[in-house]
Image (tube, rainbow, N blue to C red; front, side, top):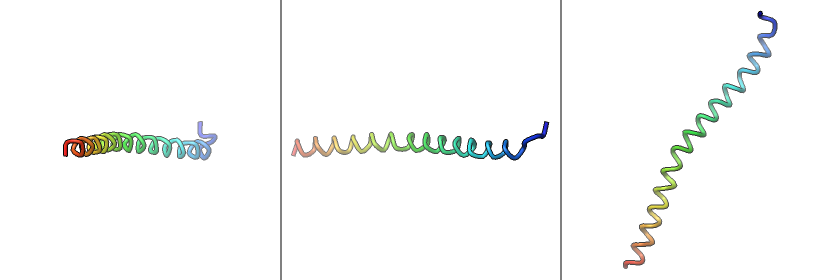
Length: 53
């Protein structure tokens, strides 16, 4: 049963880290997508405002 605990724990650490990294990247993507959309909206509004004036 308990033949190789060190290697298993050594393998478990990077997997956990990778899961955390993927989770944080997903979170960042969720944050950046609306920010990009807002920036596009602002630039579009600026363009239309300059056209009107």
